[in-house]
Image 1 (tube, rainbow, N blue to C red):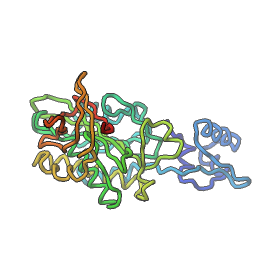
Image 2 (cartoon, rainbow, N blue to C red):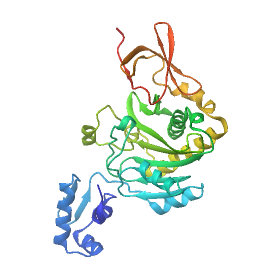
Image 3 (spheres, helix red, strand yellow):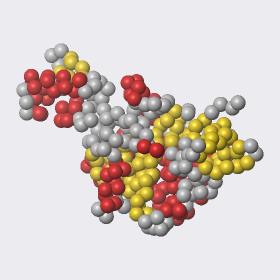
Image 4 (cartoon, one colour):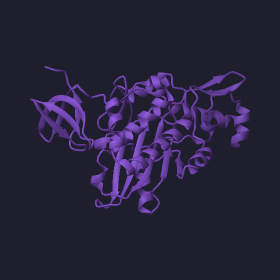
Length: 322
């Protein structure tokens, strides 16, 4: 969904007269009314206040591109912000193809083909959540990147915990962030380049900042947003903090690997000691979560034996004990 100039003018939720809007857009008041009707048809709630004008409910916070570029440039990162894109991960992959992917950040107000693991779609309402990707070049082989997605999850959890220690963030292996068992966000890590190294890595992150009641109808699982937990950080500041957390995690992983994150992962692990089922091809494995090993593999105790399950090979679902 693209906002258009009228939505930008109404975004803050303040009353704007038809005359003022018409002057700003260079159109008549009648044309303003037609554009307001078009916004309503798209699902936006635009209130009409007699003899005063229009206002958007609820207001939305659009990203300030200039501010973000200045703040991230100081951290050695390049930034592109799209009003709408197919996928921020795809944008960074294109940047790598052009030789410009390292330290490249792409953010978006909305994306039309957002993805999670196994090609699942990721729903995010326009200008309400964090949608972004970071490109990073690792001077190592792909095999040495085992545990990277878990390390990045730890980095995001740490970042959010610093914002509000009462959030009680959980990590559901391998890439989901949760609060109270409800999904807050997810990571999608994609590799390009030579498997023998160096590796070009694209780190995609979607995180719920705001969700309205109507948004939950588009989500196929229990979900939660930061705003519902009393976290009042702006989308602008959240974007900067998350991007810097991911950058710092990449640097730390380069120096120390998953070992630097393993202890904290155990603290956030929402599957530990829970009854689980894992699918490996046609084989179903039932057991209990026993944390992750030094390479980030999920450990499941089943029938007195400890099994290790690696990212990308299985899907994991909780089940009730028999």
